[in-house]
Length: 443
Image (cartoon, rainbow, N blue to C red):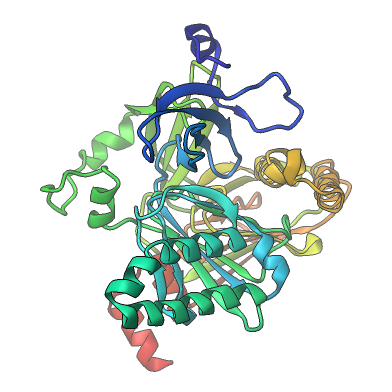
């Protein structure tokens, strides 16, 4: 039996990387009461870290007296700044094998059947698309014997609906699976990584006041208005420090925030967090101005190793494309960053290769590991200046930027295009104002 000792906590994070090679790592066992027979059973807790899903607690209960068992997953990491919505078009039976992490606060929908599993009605789970369907069927069947005796007509209609759910696993027709999680801690596997997944759309959204209240981030009687901010001139001249928690080990840390004017561009807010406990460092950038009327597509042609030192501002709504590698990184994947071209490429490699959960352990396959390793090798060649490619920053809010080293003269290797956002992009960005309505009427 493994114990969470004071030495383990003080020596580092109690959450360890999930790996089949760590044979010495055992779950923590706790004697607890069985909720079925009310005798004592055993709960096993496994505290682990899954990239893209932060820290999790896997809990498994079993009772030797009545053979009842229960397994659930809980997020032990922080609630993300934005919610996330995964929309998956299930086209083949292979799509049923995609791994899915569903937090307990996530809403699951299948629009074709007008079916919805509300938030907080199921425990968090680590499963597959097929597992989600099986769990939904099991939940609906649970009280069917009592319904057949009390309300036979309702039970008959429910039986028909259960058959429709079961038939989805045959994938005779495409259907859509939507997982909307205001905590931002759910995840759906992209088996084509690092390439774009045509069947999977990932969008980030700002939580509503009601969602903040559900997650315990706001008191029920809080007003909707945000508290007034500090004086802008004061903020420009100072570095503001406020307490927070490390996103890696969850230890107390501090975040520094400062307004910075980028030459030939605009003002941005840079936030940096340093953790004294584990040494983790992170920086995030947010635009200091409003959303621009037009989107911006910035294309940089890498022709010389010196291009790696160009400053790059990538907002959290910006997608990154490398056409020569058929690679696309969706908005929100790396958050907002103020870095260099080299720093951006290294962050992409860390996200898609080094910290990819499907590169090791039971989730890895030889083909997937080989494909991701080859992608990492190509990124290394680009970083070494041995491979000339284009890097495209596509930002519908117009708040991303690549340094022009010839400024104020035009840069021959840099192209900046302005474009009008589509109605769908405005919807995704939450810009439901008169401009959006006018655009919809015109188109």
